[in-house]
Length: 220
Image (cartoon, rainbow, N blue to C red; front, side, top):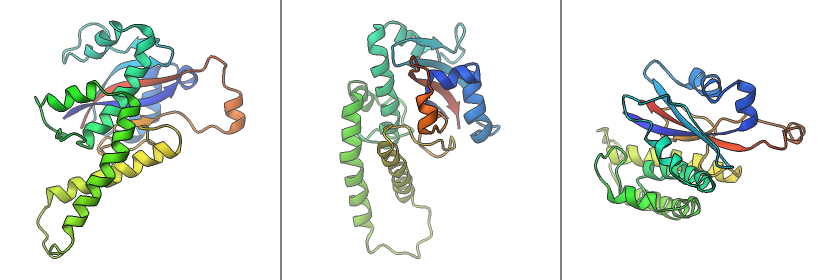
């Protein structure tokens, strides 16, 4: 399966790595990907609206769609659109609006997500997911603990609980929707690739340092 992953970066760490591609390879691909996780870098969008395509020409899978979409946007709208897209990745994996994670061709949930802002998605995840988990585990009380058949609903609820823990950690650290890096199979597709910096390190950052998001199509 292919899916788009989002990685929070800044211009300083991209510059020190030499390029967005080099940063992704060094900080994520080498540490977390295996031979099955082939990938295509798509684009990087910065908070001032600057963007860089990481696909040259026409891609055989059509993965330049994102670049073409953002090129049509006013520059001042690109960053909020990129943040909202990164947030919607997390919302989709939570099946927040009844849109199954692996569904193809279901448009109602996608259209709703496309219309929602970063802050609206943040609010809905914090409101809806805990309630869904509470209701699921409440209804499991009294089930046979010796039944060892594979339980898809339990598996999904367990994944959601882990995902919600990563999400809340990202909120607590002041970078909602961007968890610490996890593996491609861990079902949290928005991550922070910036290095840890002390207060002294942050004080030395260039004045023009700016946040960015790298989007990558990754196979699992």
